[in-house]
Amino acid sequence: MAKKSAQVESVRDVLRVEPAGFEIARVDPAGTPVGPRSKADAAADLAKIGVELDGLQEALYAEGTGGGRRRVLLVLQGMDTSGKGGVIRHVAGLVNPQGLRIASFKKPTRAELRHDFLWRVRRQVPGPGLIGVFDRSHYEDVLVARVDELVPAAQWRARYALINDFEAGLAEDGVTIVKCYLHISPDKQRERLVERLENPAKRWKYNPHDVDVRAKFSQYQTAYQDALAKCSTAVAPWYAIPADRKWYRNWAVARVLLEALREVAPVFPEPSYDPVVELARLQEADPLR
Image (cartoon, rainbow, N blue to C red; front, side, top):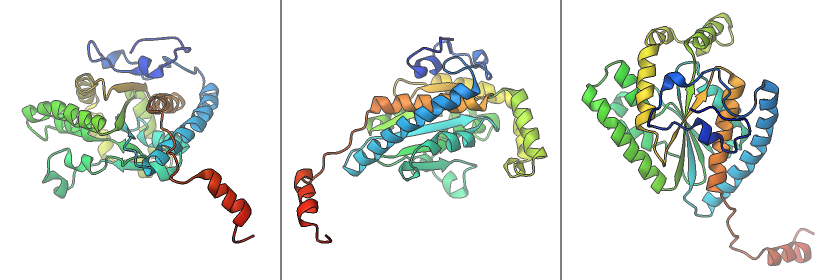
């Protein structure tokens, strides 16, 4: 992830994971490689982003009701406390919830395990006109499955190609895929876990298993390194988001999503009626006047 000036037009260009030579260790979790350098500036810009996002989402939703097939899928991955829930609240929360489909992927159920690993994911792909948000995703099957040795190595290695084929198929079907890896440091993760335990209002977020997963932090970094490098493609690139600073994380994901929606450029469908005629009916022959 190259350092560029705050004036760079495309934030996606700065944060995009380029498979050749990508090193997760070179991504600074506390960095602000592009965009605002302060919490106040980020908040001001996020408000502007929200206005534009809301307008684009409304056009996308309207396009879907008119028969359009296009939709957007935001994939969020990251270690515990990296802020997937925070992004859903502060970024997805900027738009009308009517146009959202949010799916969370936890440990597969017995029913899900009877199918291939993509089965449960396919069922959650957003419909036309919607913005879908995945809180974790099909990448769990090359992360958790690898680190915890849930399947043989040959099996999880084969999944990279299956994932790329799956995402290419989604793109062909009108899905714009935005994949954001929320990169948090081990020190910041510990700080947030302690905060969850010390704050009664946040203890519900804590799971004793979190400490067991934290013990495998380095193994997960290796797994993420490979997943991002092998599955950052032209139609479904990964974006490495510094996540130690919550305000920057939220701004960066919102800006990446905004740029993707600008590229989609949804349009309101043409009405099946004559607006001039209908306006005249209301003005001249309104039955309630």
